[in-house]
Image (cartoon, rainbow, N blue to C red; front, side):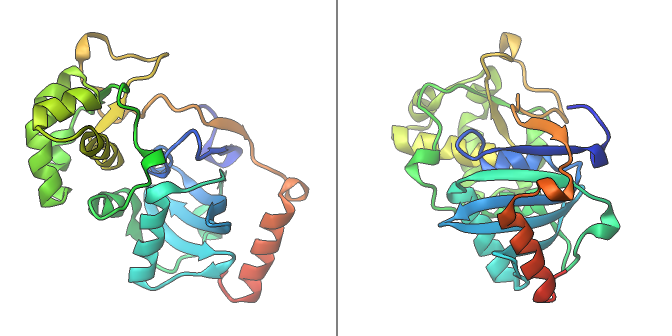
Length: 241
């Protein structure tokens, strides 16, 4: 991914990328993540500054209550739909209602998330441990910490859900769910056809999964979609800006 932060927009479809993966990719960026029809037809907008979420809007209206913010993030983890677009902005252009470390919050929510079966990885998809994952174990829910101790030796070499199920003496469905949660927590990443990790080595610290997001010049005002223009105007009218 090249270009200055303020010169690029990142966009894609949640049919191809999980919300947690998008959040990881954006942890060094500053701007607005716009999710069109992400939750039952409702649009979501997140204001992000280098890993911190500063504001959250649904259909243009601000969401400020801590429990409601967590609930929206949990739903996005469960199965965000539709398309997303990230537009780089200067920090002073963002709305600031709070300051939450987004990826840390997602890790804390991962055990409670009720994941739709369609979001779970295929049983043949192989995963590998991310280097430095042990440093994150303390931030995992206790039950997921225990699961990690069982399967981390296997995943250091690389393994799929069928192998995890055998290693941890659980069902295939439980193994797929475990891998989803470990991936959302930033502990493992899937092999990609274009970027298989040789020799089963862990992925280098600080690197991202082989991510196929598009990168393009930031949209000019007249190129912004009608839906987004409407939501921006609504947000200003409701005092959310």
